[in-house]
View 1 (tube, one colour):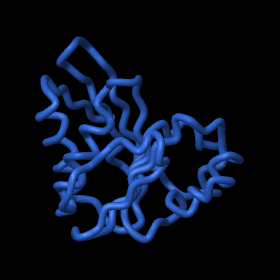
View 2 (cartoon, rainbow, N blue to C red):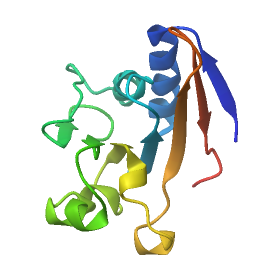
View 3 (cartoon, one colour):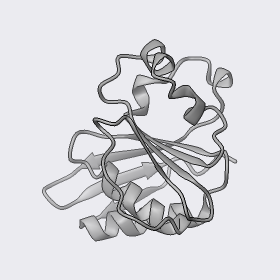
Length: 145
């Protein structure tokens, strides 16, 4: 897995922007990392890369935010408060994670994952790790179609 080191929120957003510029309809990106690791900052940049206007907010309490107006719709989900696949399906969020009609970024993806990836399609993983107050290590799977 390639690794990117970010030394600021701006660099994390720039990395997200590069990913967003290359993203295609139907892709699902799964974000993992501790609280404060920079997941929402990465999504802000990703939205810019897709050309989505407007301000990106953490969807922790809303579960999902949809951003239109860009090259593709962006669906930003946060699974932190959900216990697993059954609760995710019960909340109606699986539609955003199984070949979405845009691009989905899913924070806390580990809450959804099952051993049978074929059941829900490929997920491009991005792991964010806090190295110090300003520095993040971001490893990502660039092998997915």
